[in-house]
Length: 469
Image (tube, rainbow, N blue to C red; front, side):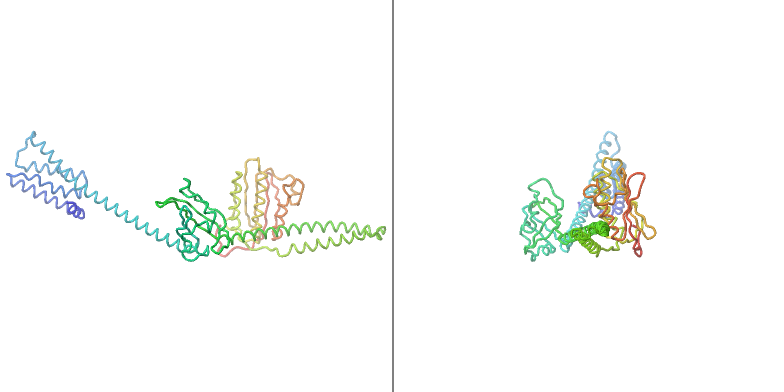
């Protein structure tokens, strides 16, 4: 019966036509042969109609067949007898039609569910293949471990990172290679799941130590808790940061030594003038201590001049993209200001040039100005720092403006070791020295309210086909 109905489902229009023809034949036979009752034969056209019509048309067809059976039947119509028979026949015919309709609907739902399941299986298989290909070809070391730390899976990048032979990692404990991962609680030990990162030390199979950035997560499976980790060798980044920090320290030290040497030369020159004036009087010309003092001043002046020449050599500006520097500054400064509830406003033109500067030095200057503004705005409201960029006549300027109380004595701003300054008072002095050593400048711009510093840099030009930033 079901196979027959499934076949009818494929040709719904034919089923309706066949049911109409069959109904006409049954009505004709019922009309011509009056001695027999053929009303039960209407079950067959209803079976056909149930495969092609909606429920309300099925019951309408059942009512029509009931009327035909009543009209062409062998018995006269008597309400007391015929009406219950007609109701029963209508229910039987409608029930047969709804039965076949239900079978077809269930069949369609079954086919749709099967189609969806097949699509999900195909999509899952494709995703698994893509994931397997990604893991196999990824340059990042990917590991999957049990809750106990035993390594279940490791791609080729993991074997290269840990200097292990093919398949050598499988079965070993992760504590042998990354001890910090061995102390991560598994999903079986705690209800808390971990999806985080950490910086730690790793160990290769030959015993070499390297710096590692590890991104890991814990999860549960039907076979127990699992720990998945991505491991990146960050030793090169660590070296670059150390070298950049050392270069910045040495640059600042050279500038500071140059400034101190300059001041020493000024003091020595003044002492030398006084020494010469005293020597002209003739009264101290024969005094050995006075002569020794003159030699000491001359020697000290030579030392200061030598240090100044050595400390200002080898420090040059580079052509850098101002847009990239401002992007890096936003990444560094915005979280820093959010911690103190300071709003930041960026007024940046759509087109920015290349400038003569040093990326790390310029970032240090911007960070120093922002820290000064943050300290100045403690206890004030509103708190806002505006960084605006302008380019004109071959000069690019970055204005850092805050809504603080302002500067009472701007003439002492760039003097080192000034009285009343926080720490050593070298921040602004070194910042301006950095910019001047790179061919730029840092100056204070008076404002009615707040405080504004201007960073000046020489424009190196615009890139060919420069796009709006």
